[in-house]
Amino acid sequence: MSGSVGKYVLGVDIGNSKTSYALAGKDGVVYRILRGSGANYQEIGRDEMVTRLTQSITQILRQQAITLEQLCYIYYGAAGADTPEDFTVLRQAFRETTPNTFFDFDNDGWIALHSGTAGKPGMVVTCGTGNTNFAVNSAGTRMRIGGLEEMLGDRLGAPAICGYTLAAARRSEDGRDEPTILTSLLPAAFGLRDNSEFINLEKNPSFVEKVISVLFEAAQRGDGKSLQICWELAQEVLKIVSRFYETLFREEKQFTLVLEGSFFKARYQPLMTMLELALHQRYSMELVIPDHEPVVGAVFLALRGCGTDLTHQVVDRVIRTCHQAEQSL
Figure 1 (cartoon, one colour):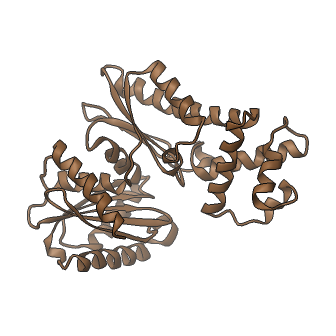
Figure 2 (cartoon, helix red, strand yellow):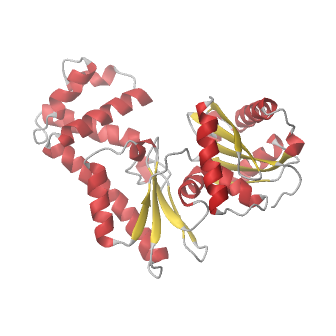
Figure 3 (cartoon, rainbow, N blue to C red):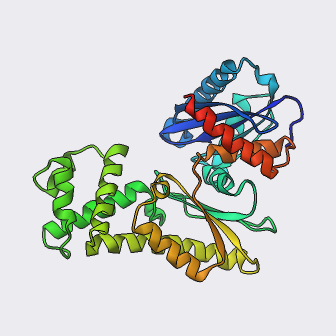
């Protein structure tokens, strides 16, 4: 569906813990960035999602002193867009949110891909709160791997990595596994006597981030178990890339791999060196770790939806003005 009336587009990245909104002109200038509360309907329910989206969209339009009628197109990247049933629920919910505005949507992993490729072919592996992986080749053939939950095979995602780290420390402490300095580093980092006391702590995002930072501190000090965890994470990325490559990219000379999410953006060592060495040994590829948020991908797709060509100038303008808009938050 392509819109023509209006001078603005809106990109929306719907997550579990937060939702990001980026308001841009059809020329690619990003005017406003807004952070709202999480709006994954699987977590809060469909009706509450509509309420939160409506309130935040109204807010960002008021900040720019424009009306909904001046929006040409909205693109939503939605956490929770996983099954055909999800797409049915979300399509109706978005229609209710902005009844007379052209829109389209997909899983939030799809906008993460386009955030790094600016609408061109490529593949994305994400690692943040969770893990979702998408690819599209030059023929337009799409593929998705994972992105459901850990029990259904996802091995990336910060909470999962936190779990591997805590388990390694505790199992070493009680003698079930090999020695690791995680056994002493983790309790010391949290002011605990031993690893059994982690059972009483809230496993919130800041907790997860701190545990992961200890993991990579231990790895950089040469701890064998921590290095093993790093290599297992690198292997999981390599397996996803290999599957995409064999299915979609074998006939293409080169491809772009986007690594998206807070975990990759932290550029933890030695994991990133492990990954880069292995990837470049096997593939002719461009590795991209965006320095902007995935909502930029939603802006790219909204611009394309309203007929704007994603030229180098437009892409650069979106990224540059998005950074400027973020600084004013």
